[in-house]
Length: 54
Image (cartoon, rainbow, N blue to C red; front, side, top):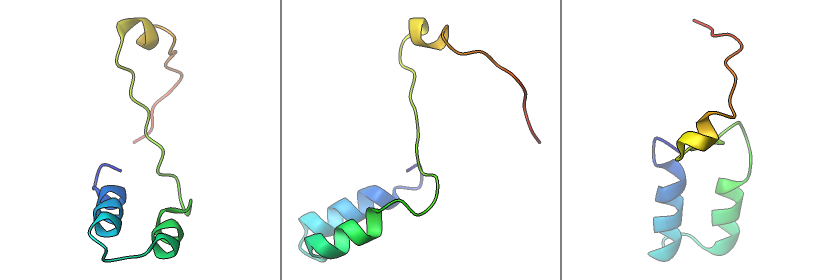
């Protein structure tokens, strides 16, 4: 996530601050957190802008 929430959970698990069960309960899907990165111009050309919101 852009705010590093998931990374912080990973770091806490690696550091032994939380166990595996707690880690998975924290990272389980609770609200949309998906991020997609298009790293090639060819991938960007597959997108079609439909509308925007304010």
